[in-house]
Length: 391
Image 1 (tube, one colour):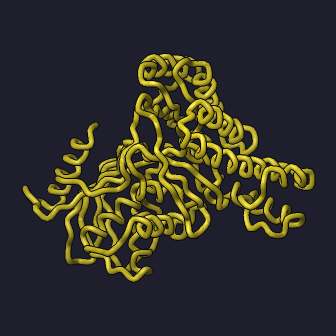
Image 2 (cartoon, one colour):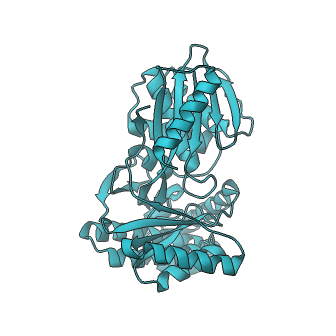
Image 3 (tube, helix red, strand yellow):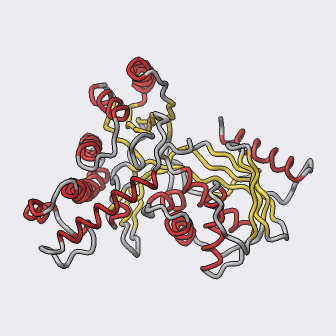
């Protein structure tokens, strides 16, 4: 589905909701999903991440109303839900994410207007490509458009993050919302996930490459195991503080310091700490190698990250490992790793253009033979972050 056809479907559904043939006041926006090139599970440990946007969007078309009611139809769920802007009680539905955005807009002193909207996700839901963050950022952008709010991109990202982290109670970091709101074409976002969230856009030299994403369609209960891993990391910090009282989080410990004191940390806490500390070092090295245009070393670092997520953080699975093992032996692949929280979802590879079709065809065939399931494949570029669309 092209962006234009997705936009037209949303607009048509909005007109159906409004029972009108034409709505000249309608506004629209898109917010992209993401992959994280490297920096797995470092974000909620106040570490470093290096995400990029992907050319898969959350699209919303809306018209303002004067009723202080937000009404959204999800084409994906074929469901219309609404809430009042003075009632943010959660009901367990997908609309809770929008409620969280409205709630924190008001807490920041903004007065959002109600609107009626239709939305459609090109981002696979539950695939580890941040469909929820894209929805939060897109909803925030619609509030910005319909209410003429003076809301810059960083503030939008923060409000979207609070909606997921505080309102929804998911122990995520700020990466997903930041890249969806601040991403730029053909650039990666080097982000320090400790306040004040310093960030830098770094060119990604992929003119002769594509980002190829393989979706296993294995769904995971992200909230449950992220909260477990976060607790394990916090326990690791407390144990390391016995030797390194200056540290506030795992990002403050160097690889050498960890090696000196790791024998005092019991398993599996030791493995969790080792992954995060070494992964932060890999992110910093990847940024430097990307700036030099050294994609060969970048690819090696991506594979090392996946292996660490598999053996130390233990968030991979046989299906994801199968894809990575296949990519490692194929000509034309720079590197790859799982993306998202893990335990299913997606793997990406950076693939030279002329090899894409052969690799996709071969891998999909071998995967189906091994697991009896098909892979969904998305071939992506790096687009801008959230932006207004013309209807």
